[in-house]
Amino acid sequence: MAVILACRARATYRRHLDIQSDLMECDDVERRQLWTGVGAAVVLAAGVATWAVMSEAATSSDVKTTLSAHALLQAGLVQANEKDLDGAEDTFTRVLTIEPDNKLAWYNLGVVSQQSGRPADALKAYDAVLKIDPKFTSAIFNQAMLLKTTNPDRAITLLKRAISLNPKAAKAYFQLGEALAKRGNGTGARDAYRHAILIDQSLFSQVPKPFRDADMSVLHPASPSR
Image (tube, rainbow, N blue to C red):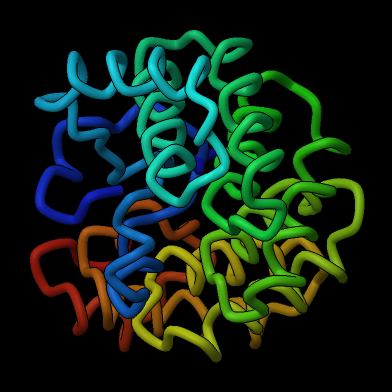
């Protein structure tokens, strides 16, 4: 599995869960503040300043402000990037005491829970995100990844929903193909894989051989079907 941030720096941090940067292409500017997984990056240039602000926010009488919540959110991203998951979780929780409907805090709390091996907590956090913003594709995708094994039908529904929100989400198509194949829907799986390759030809080598037909190899002529 895999779980996204700052589009400008996304190539520098590729070690988290399984959500893909292509799910974020159509998201608004605010979502570029996220800490996520593959294709993700935390902008650490402001790390020292962020920590300083976080320390001040912890003691300030004016902590319940948007600025304080933003500073804490950035601090949590730094902690997460440094693999201080317990600290990041505490910090994101503090953001939510200031702004209970902060979808970025809820999302990152879900990512931390997912990274910490607590899928039930992660699902609850993603549910909170989607109550605030039903079109938050990253949360939808992450939920699908968590449910692929335990509730594949629900995972398929979520992947289709993510694709409907972002038709260029190649990895969502690929994961849908994988899920459908496991459910015995070969036709649907092949169609999903084809869509994935049309968007991102680099995925061709990952398509299981039984689903690599002649037409698909035309989409990726450098890697003919075998």
